[in-house]
Length: 274
Image 1 (spheres, rainbow, N blue to C red):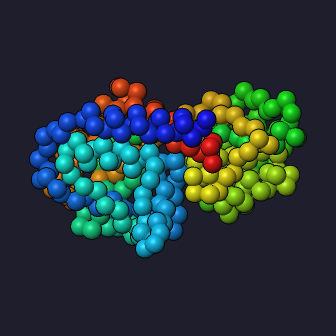
Image 2: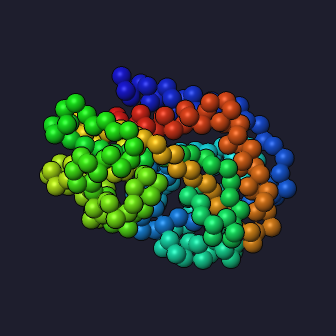
């Protein structure tokens, strides 16, 4: 039954793409715009992930952000290609604007806002806490973020920032080296709770790393906002501001029609089916 649902959602998605007619833009037809991503940890499912395809092992991009860009490309008769570098080089090249003109969505800070054009938010992720149902059969119910510290040890990932979870980083035992390691620690009862973003945690099954199963419960962290993610575009590209405009207009159309939510839902259903 799940396979039939997924097939139906794919058919609806591609039907919607065909309903877009090409719009006018000052970007010349057939222009290739190069998008940078991290070669070390570029997988951020369900938003973007890269899968080697046999026999030549070409890396094929997939995910929510890729689908949005395919709609932009079709509507405005342009093309996107992907380049993977170490993350620091991605931003170095983006600032120059020669080999890379854009990066897949990231969170914003003052430095990024000053150096680059940013689009409207194209998606949000949800700060959440996860626990073993065996340990907490009635679930964990808190009214404010700091209440989670009274439950027991709270684990997170090395180098991650948990300010957006409403907590001080010092309050989180940040020792997990990966998502798999984090949830292994939970299942081994080395902590009471782990912190992660729900969408990207569920999405890991799309690349063969299923972190969630029926033994894990989760809830949204109360009293905190979802985190916004935006495409960044170099200011050293003649069509940079125009590229921002056409992406914003396309995302707004998809949002107003309800298609943006449907694209994300399709990938989350795929995650659960894996």
